[in-house]
Image 1 (tube, rainbow, N blue to C red):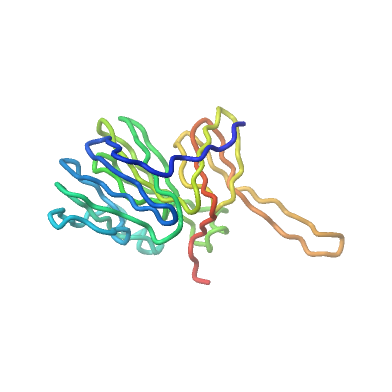
Image 2: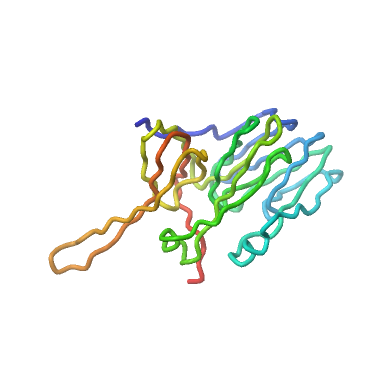
Length: 231
């Protein structure tokens, strides 16, 4: 299996899907987007600054009540140009864009999404079952972005630095549950548990990880992020 490779940490005058964008900064990077005819949508709390002429409004999403119960945002915000707008997440990390062509999709771990072009269809899936143990017993969401148009971009934020690996069919990698960011839909994910014993009379401990099976891409972040719980 190949070793995960660091993704680019900056972008200058990158043009795709009807927008031009820039990523700058070392500790807490910022994404700035030049809007023309293509609108973008984002979580409202990541907005950093904008030109006054950029129009910002609400983008409703289906299944909002399910996400409200789980403490997730119940709406997305939409921006229309012309003009510039910038985003940043309140945490040290790595901002990057994924370019999707027609028919491509990507699955994204919750709390990693920054913004996306309007050409991408947004959805989400709630993960239940034994993996709930890792997330305070409530489960967690995986966001999905699908390109129904010719092309689109989704921008993500990773904590620490972000590395990507492309798994061949049947290849596997185990990642700490707070360490993965996105995967191709073709990549299967399982939650694994291993019991550890510290000795004959000592109590046993347990470690867990997410096992990903190819084919397809998986990305991980060097700083673990775990969902907040009631505790």
